[in-house]
Image 1 (cartoon, rainbow, N blue to C red):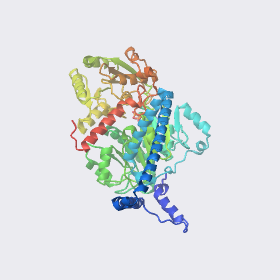
Image 2: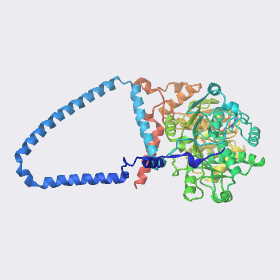
Image 3: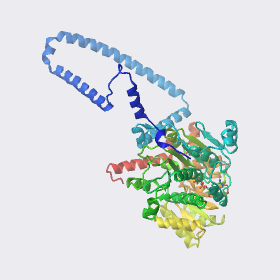
Image 4: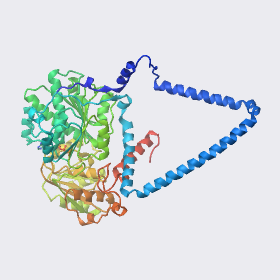
Length: 609
Ligand SMILES: Nc1ncnc2c1ncn2[C@@H]1O[C@H](COP(=O)(O)OP(=O)(O)OP(=O)(O)O)[C@@H](O)[C@H]1O
């Protein structure tokens, strides 16, 4: 794969300069910078005002022509009255028209209007937050060029045939010139060493997100990849960066201070570590087959970077990072993004807020199982000719998971948990929303003789790593976790996920149950709900179960949707993807707003509560 970053981007400011030079000499108007123009306008305004003030102070003039002024004043009074009458009439007419329009609007229209207003506000806020590139006047209009080509017979395949393949795999695509789907890894021209390695891990043929996503990424296209949990997204975004790094290293070997060519951003340390280990396995397979060594740096909080000093000292090809540590490393100038051509955000709906202050062009990929419309819209605006690859509704549950929802009183939960653990053999994950509850559950299970580890944000990095390792290796049967482990972590053959406390946001629920039923296997998820579960959350859950064709228990069936009585839209929320509410009362949006306000309070020097 060859890429040519420096020549591709169109710098709007440079183009403007060019047009200026092209102007004919006769028409030549000297260019005045905007700032100077503003200054000139201000000076002009100030001088007119000054002139007016001067004339106002000249009382002599007023006494010389009093009659003239009186007549003029009378004329002005008449004109003002006429204008006021006209304006009043116009205002009344506008009001009447608006009232008429409002009356004819359905509740659906009003909800849609309200929703688009909220979304527009979010979009503008986000654009302002991250678009330093726009401020610099840089706009890229072409995708990254790569040397990868599909086999000729696939290149020549008709669009109709491509559409039929997509339909067979239930893949939806959006975008210009979408690259063709490819149904085998060999036809994707993936090196045999990687194909062989994948085979030993029972990865034989590409999943839907891979068969459309990999050719799209190999073609250098920006991409939004949406596919349900456990459907193989990691491979889809890791292979392209590995191929890019391999080509760059083969051409001219990297030395100290060079790289990375690609960055993968993950929302948690655990997910970053897992992705890093996957990349090490694939690049290791390449190296064993005689390909050059590719160096990957794991850049996460809680670990000492000194351990990886050796890798850093040799030049790095790929960085897998969490945002905080990545920014820290960039600020410390341990490496930079000058030659970075590939940026992927895993679980992208969490990561989108980030903006980086550099202007080299690169390919951007966003992946998630839950990608609400809000994020998709924002991404569509920010990416270059993006291709949207969608397998199933964004935010839908994995159909390989049997979802059981049970009403369990708060005080009965612990005892019932023990009973629930008997449903399947280990390994089992128990999710709770709250760190203290995670500790309590683990303590209780240990007391009852269950081999359980716990993981949450307040544990040290060593404790977190130990818990994951012990659970992954099968030394421990149960892992009790807070949200940390809900996104993206890929444990082998989880039989059962028990959600001890239903999360407020339905997206989190989708990620949590998604720890089972991965890579085509089936799994069970049992969720405890009770009086403490918000009605809106129950409604989201009810619709999600209905969508997935799951049994809806009687107590959930009786939860009524207030939108039905109000005749409102039943479209679902564009912010979090929940089907039981609209954007106007989205718990995720409320949470974001609460956080933003808290951050403002801190920034303003307010102590908060
Ligand atoms: N083509 C394939 N065939 C069979 N198994 C695969 C294939 N691709 C990936 N897998 C396996 O499927 C499992 C899930 O993959 P992965 O972790 O990439 O899912 P994901 O889509 O990223 O899920 P999540 O949304 O939860 O992050 C992994 O164990 C992976 O090795």
